[in-house]
Length: 231
Image (tube, rainbow, N blue to C red; front, side, top):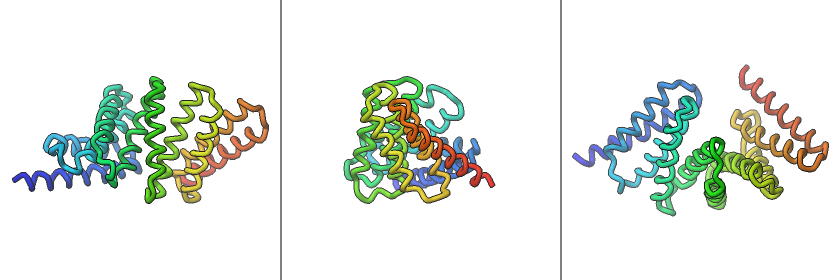
């Protein structure tokens, strides 16, 4: 009956999320392909009125975004944007999934912008991240993910406008993200990268040697983190 189908779709969604998490650790393509298959099957059978439907769309969008990173197929990125946008648009404002769904959309947009810059899309993604960061109770790891992706988008905005405010905000977002990551945790790497880049850009703007010294210190810390992580 219908109840059984709904239950199966929820199970497929949970399996897809677990497969995505394992893919993040293993980079085994079969995990990503299996997660995508689970989501596509569930999407075909799940009623759009169900509460888990936005989460399902966002999870499938993340599958396509990850697949694009491997395949480079432009259609994967386009599909990821369409699905992530729909998930964000139909999500109830009070949903507990807002932080993760808006994160997925922000990641898709930042990846799209590295291929083809669009001022309005960047501003939209920046606003999405800032809205989530105003929500109390967002777990530290999700807050850090939002801050890192916000720093990437602000970097893109700075490259487009040259506005020092964007560079200042980029630095602050990356620094705040780093403060939320445990020492020696591999997830510190992206925050270290973005913070280091922000100080390099600051040096290019001001010529202050302390900014260049700070950039080199951060990049060295990132290299050390990678060496320790590979032992």
